[in-house]
Length: 203
Length: 204
Image 1: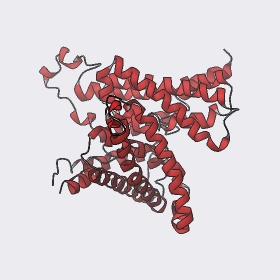
Image 2: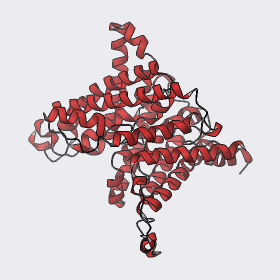
Image 3: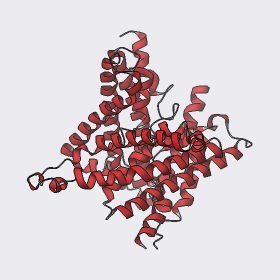
Image 4: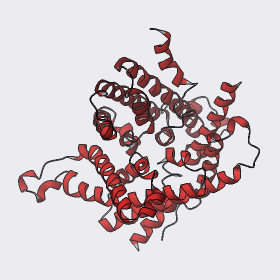
């Protein structure tokens, strides 16, 4: 694998992260991260949708008339999202209930449309696939960090396992910070992640 | 009274931005000045008000399990609900396009004001989210759905105009360089969300 292709995967992880640097796809990233499990499921679903839609649009890129490209992209993305939605409902029904409307909202996730417009319309299929995987993972990393912090400090557990209770922290007077599971704290946490990342990348 | 209750609830308690984070992308990108954010807010409200009731009718008469019974009794056990995502987004894209053309023809001044924002709205998650929440919450009739759509739109409008006003003032404050722009906007939105949480539990 040459260095250009490696960059397609590595850059979105930190330097060109879709959430913290490009500020795309915020809606779902905040809404599904109250616990780790839905966050991971969501990250995988979005990665699959971005990678496959990038691949498909890139294969079709020379045949799509520019005037109707948005509609074509929307149709491809929504077909993929319907597939993902059905698969989630079939195999992980409880998580799919938790994610509720946010699976459907992958269609309007700005990362997906943004990558299709900015990359897949002008690049070869394999590169587009890698770009999709890279951006999906970049999105996934932030989701996992948020899900980890919010579940650990919000409900004292990880992946549903009551970790703080087993450690006996409650007996010595520890209390869960219930506020961290609520909507406003998610926004503030993302703000803090952006802060840390930017000062690290600039330094 | 039920209508008014839904209306107030969707503005303050189930606020699109503060409670469900819908439409964050354009919320962050377009909230630099009050004037443009007001334009976008009005456009979002307008499009929500049209698309959500239409999608409600589609859902009720075509998509729901057994909804096709009015065509012929033999279709009574057809369940098309898996098609709702693609149908909703198609309706939204088409309506946005149509609204754009109608507004351009009949009200050039409104078109100039909304102009660049209308096409953006087709991929705004607040619009799609409005339709999906409508489907999920199972409102009783089209009046309730309309109240929900109007309330959600106005809630979004209040949020974006509020943050734009704060960001205009923010230009003169000393913010750590790495936190400038998006970072501080997130944190302030979080604080606004905390303020909006105080509306929780209001019932009329």
